[in-house]
Amino acid sequence: MRHGRPFLVKEQRSASQLGDILLVASITKTLSSSGTRNLPDPHTLSLSEPLLLQILRAQSLQPSKKLDFFKWCSLTHNIKHSARTYSHILCTASRAGFLHEVPHLLHSMKEDGVVVDSQTFKALLDAFIRSGKFDYALEILDIMEEVGASLNTDMYNSVLVALVRKNQVGLAMSILLKLLEGGCSSQVPNSIASNELLVALRKADMRVEFKQSKPLQGDERL
Image 1 (cartoon, rainbow, N blue to C red):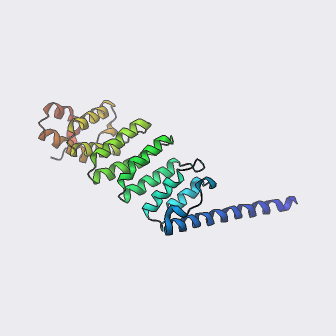
Image 2 (cartoon, one colour; image 1 turned 45 degrees about the horizontal axis):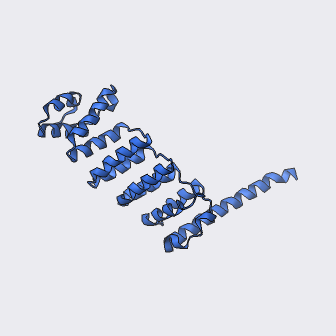
Image 3 (tube, helix red, strand yellow; image 1 turned 90 degrees about the horizontal axis):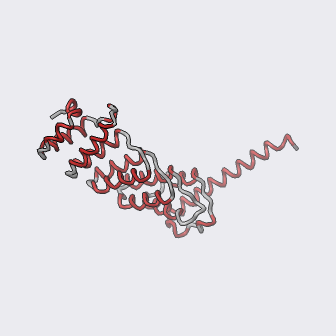
């Protein structure tokens, strides 16, 4: 009997994997054809993070269906969203142009006590900047501060450009000064962000601030 136990365990594992495959396929097919209205009661399901990600990554599903499914999962305490599932749905929403969904998703994320990585925040910032929604870009920055997420240099570059194009030059300058006060040369904005800020300072005739931005002027391409 002992010699047969590994085989039995292997069979059980295979059966479990097959069950997961069938469950993912069934949910994906239902979502694709009729959305969430024909899905089973969410309280009867216990979907793990890997299974959730498989469904959210399904190429056959439209972004809107993925968003609906994500919200449907939030209706029950049996299905917990993780940083990875939040990151995936936030990026899906931003790439598909559903930027109006992002604030609600971020609010849910905070309520769940989840924090996505800095790359996800940067993707959101870039999406709002490209679409000209600078107020939302600033809101992302506020949320990052609230949840204790850190900014890397690339994100600072995005924020500075967003603020300059919003004509919030003074606020952009205050962020720059915080960077310079840190004393880390790697945190100095890149040439694109630096040039945009320097041009804006000149146009606004902000001479004192322009002098304060002297560390940037070595990269100036004006």
